[in-house]
Image (cartoon, rainbow, N blue to C red; front, side, top):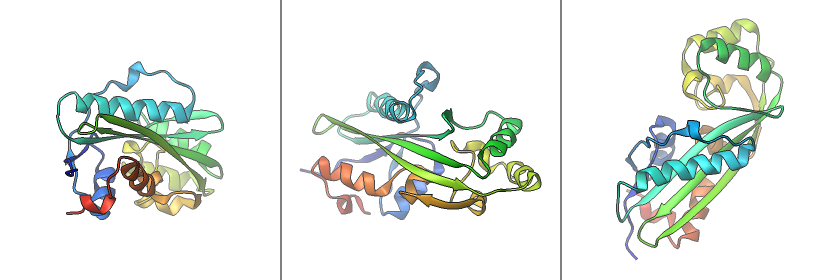
Length: 197
């Protein structure tokens, strides 16, 4: 079985960098999937549904490819949070997050057009947030970094200073779980190293 082109159905620079660091240079094909049409209150089901929707939207435009869609949300005290709409929302969110433990869910969908198979999985990582000050929150939001992140923080960026510890997969918090991807590829009878370039 040949190795199909690996397509990332996401405009996320963090996901692209994660894959590249792991040796996979994906074809980046951002999805135009309309997330607003999905109204699900279970974080785990939500991210899997959105990931599959994104991968499916891109798959409809391609043939003979392996398409990966991902989506992440942060669940905190029973509330699901995506990317903040504006700076005021980001500041308010950090006031809720500080000193708390959030659950970062990432859905992963792989559509293998060669084998006509679809795999959908999710991963959850617990994130322990520091007791940051109002000044630190304002300064962080002013950098703009939290605005493009589902959890309102980037673990691999300045936001990493405000995370005390994580329980679970580190790369999952950044946008996709590399160990889970390896397992999913194996389930499709691929060896992850065959995608190295």
